[in-house]
Amino acid sequence: GDDDGDLRQMATDLFPNILVAMLTLTQFVSGDSVSSVYLPFILADPILIIFFVPLILVITIALMNLVTAVIVETCMENANQDKEVEAVYKEHAFNQLKPRLVDIFKEMDVNGDGTITMDELNELSSELRGELEQFMKADSMSEIFEMVDIDGSGEVDIDEFCDGIARIVQSDCSVDQLRIMKQLAASRREVKELRTRVKQVTEAVLKLRGQRAKLLEALGISVHGQLTPISPR
Image (spheres, one colour):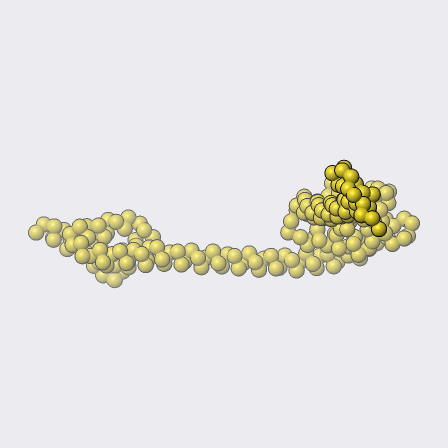
């Protein structure tokens, strides 16, 4: 009837030759008004759903997700390669910077004992102070000393000084993030020490209780304050 004639005309319009047929299939790839292609055919002959549903699942959904996954994976690989190149560049830049850092350390070490303190750091000239703050990307000398004093001893030797600056120069984290991580590490260390001290105090209290109980028993007094008979010897 008229419906069959309309479907034939539609099929002729959509698939007259290979070129137009490929353009029609491109609609399935991009999902561009694809319902206008398959819906009339399925309504006329529901058995065609067996053809169109797998076509939509494979081309529109699976294929495009596969293409997206390949693009994302390629971008991630490029990003990782960029990070590796950046790490090599930062390491090279630090190696060129290290001799100057050694000279700055020697100038800061006023008493020549091989270590620097916060007092010595505060005595720096304005020129060296600005140069060091530029290297460390810090706002004050106290922040610089806090970041390079890894063990928190209050003194920094040449290795600790260079390692602290290297960690900042070569790190992907900002100075604030490094400072927060160091504070967290210090907090964990203090909590661990506090737990150790609490454990020691607890053990000492238990030991004292045992000694008290033995002493009271030797004096003939029970733990509850009552007299206990002393066995004759």
